Image (cartoon, rainbow, N blue to C red; front, side, top):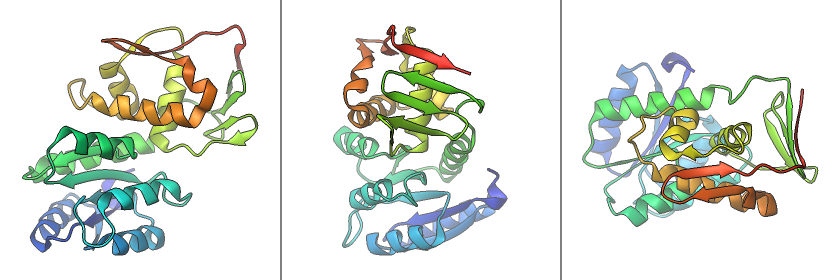
Length: 238
């Protein structure tokens, strides 16, 4: 997904910040729209269907957390990329944002050049296919149709974000082998190994909750990373 065809929605109630972000994104070739409240953001996301939202957390009315949660619930917006841009620096705030499904987190004050690079990285990994199409992975009641890019549990399609789907496929394809957090960041998030390894933990937590009993097969290897357990019932069909 290249900049000239990508639409970014900037959501912030500070006009100076909105103008600064919009200016640098437009210079990079993105089509930019803006919103100044949570309600406006949700309306714009549903109507305009942006590829990515840059979202402030401290918004009037509907908070950024609520906006993010609602985006992830709706079928039409669940795969939109989200970068949180906020003055909140505490780890609990970052963890909450990532656990709700944010793709990245940047604190104010920020470098506009770094923000543009992060936008590029998120859009690149969302646009890239997790695996080649044309095959199916089966793990007990879990079926992953890689051709259709969907996962079914007991015959019911799971509501996974693009990142959650790529994480699940990566873990299953490498099942039995321990995957470090930096390795998963590189494979799933296309990120440098030293950037926000806690991101992996939050997405694994969300993925486990959606997988139910199958989620127990995502094992935590303390101090290192994660491993999808092998099982006699696991097969791979071409």
